Image (cartoon, rainbow, N blue to C red; front, side, top):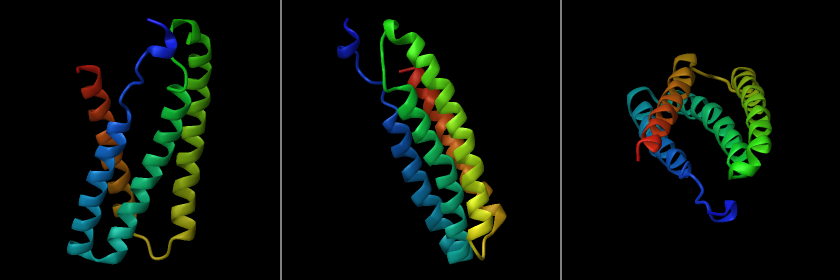
Length: 126
């Protein structure tokens, strides 16, 4: 099978699942604790989702055995970019967003990482 004909892995499903969980969490936070909590959950979730999308676009841009060296290099660049984007995201949230609830930010972040881990595991077994 040619590399150009290999199907792309369905990682977009993980982002869709994260979007659904994000809407649910933000809605529950809004109902339970108000607008500030919902905004905090949203910002923490985006701090997780944006770097994950960056990483996925870097790593899954190329496919095939011949592209293995480029894929490895892209994975390294993607991981470094993911770490930088995550750190910058947290810094931006806690510096620019007022008022903010730290618990909501970390809840949103952890929830999105959990969805990403579970989604990746499920993709491996399909």
